[in-house]
Length: 497
Image (tube, rainbow, N blue to C red; front, side, top):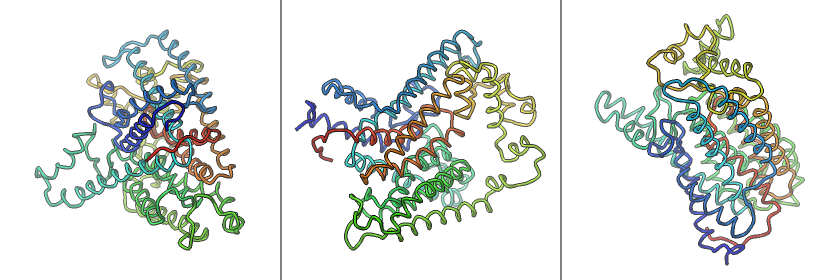
């Protein structure tokens, strides 16, 4: 039987397309995705997401029920209104064309990026409404992680075996050629893995916001989200290994920070479980029987995984020049420090974004418009010390600059109202996470526990990412809002998986 006049075949196709969206998430820069030009953000998952969105809209029309809504979306709607006002302000400023690009073109690209990002927020709100939906989604999400694992393993073989044996021969470039056949980039230099994503930092971002939170939450809550403890531990090992092998400083620091904060935030729940208060009322959905791991062992496993992560990071810090630069003394000023740790360009673009904001604090320069003002807003010291800035200022340059920091970019392009609405949206999501943690249902507590890590990761990623089209800052939040909104749903007919 269908649900609300929607046929079972229709619902089945929704699930098939949703599974495709989750499996395709690792490919972040699909070379053949149309309508994005030379943009590095080309998520392959957008291809199944488009027909899925149409099917969901059809279901809304048939059932007369809007399945995309969550109260936490109200601040996001206000942000869109602020962006509309900022667009008008940017058009009024009418900056001159730069690198053969005009403001209307950049404005259109910015709105398309926002539309793509919001679509990755709305889809999970509609598709993840209960425990059955959640387990189905996590199953296919981690199948996508398996794709990361396989291709990362091939990259490691290429780095440590093929590249050494066949150095300088055609076979030494085989993996790079295969990577470029579907992605906008090849294999990363300096023995860093990218998996199926564009670059190592993007893989680290996926690990911290898409995969790690659910593994950590399953360990902390005891909820049987995965088939067995062995599968869960294997997934945890894969997540840690992929995160460390990216050699992404921001990614690993975000991973460690979010894990520490989640452990601290969940301490009360863990203490309650360790004291045995929940023994008379076992968590529904958790593993039962003699094979169930006790809360004490669960706590030890979580602590062991965290200690292993720390050990891996310490090893990288002691052996890798890129990491060791973070702790090298001798910088006379904070600017010199950023230059020594190879973060000078990022600091320069961030300072330029701040300068643009101070010149246009209320409405900004319009979505997509910050790049037109960056060359003039760059600090003087960047003209002499940074090769990347010198290339940007060269007459031969054709690369359009960005602020490299989501919050400063929003300040520069949408002004104070835009950033205020964006922060309010994040706070509304946090409120939903706290409601999930306060629930008595095990699936909601599990989602809320993962939600702590997700929320922290997404917030911290904003300091190193600046694109609104990247699914990792949207889709995990959609899981949380969907489960929160689904608390009040009426039971639907069971759908075969």
